Length: 472
Image (cartoon, rainbow, N blue to C red):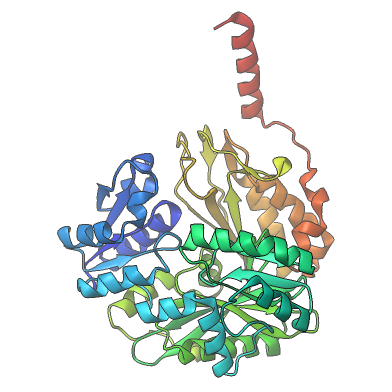
């Protein structure tokens, strides 16, 4: 078993990994920029080291992180999600320095991170993919010709993209001509690659993904699916496990596809195979995420499997502790991404100081976060503050529990997405489990909730007004 792990990340996922290490008797090493000096992950880890004054550079410095791991006696690095988690070069350097990278091999990361190579691998394995280019586009003229043949709308995508970036929908040839240079520019800036491809746009699909686990001894299983259809601009907001929109036959079919996809590319460790489900109930492979997902929590909730612990065990060379028949799901779980954003102001970030924070509790409630009362949210990172997870035996009960839990949560000093999620929970389409990726765009009225000030916020406004009046 591994003895000491450097966590090449920050925030709630770093705290999540630290907790897994503590339960496994493994020492944890945190890293932090000056902006993160007072982060909860710094306080929780067994050791913590500053990686510089720049907010982002230290988290992305492959050689500095591997050097730090070696210098502090770590035998492994866990990348979490984001940052370097899907960076094949990072995994390769770790291997060269004989430090275990907790994730798949560098070759698999590179292959699945290249969307055109991933499509080709899935086609070879007999897994359905959306019609589109077999390789990267060579020119705008070629893109226009292929789009005309497969029919609009199409999706123009960065080959090395991820996280909802480097993607543009084109409904006409004019859209394609306008967006082609934009996507190339976005891809170059965000991913260091100008390569793009296109595929047929599945209009308002359901976004269904399957969690898989695979060890180095040839064992691969799935932990059922998650429904990530509630999203805005390709960014997930609410995730559900299992999908309330699938029947048992569909569930078994897509789980089998995910296992087949993982075996086809020699995948090991935890990963996610993402699919689109169209209005004719046809599944299409979308991409494979070669890391732990933000929403792994809801899969853990319905199956009882600690995915992060399994990641560490697999990286240590151990076999999976479960066979497919051992995985039994129980009820439903919903995860709400609590973001520091103002839904009533086009979801603009709302960074600042958290004046008061009360975590929700009660049966079937889990909160993964790195915030606390008095914490100053750095403006340099993702706006997600916490993940609130609720579970219950029935779909109706998990919705009720979600509403109670969100109302139970107290988070003051900034704007958050909590009131917006409460509106979604009340919507008939959501309650009937009849929604797709177009839900948020279809219902702009949901941001028109009452903006009544909470007592603490009202007190702050009154105090500010008094100070202004008295000149204090």
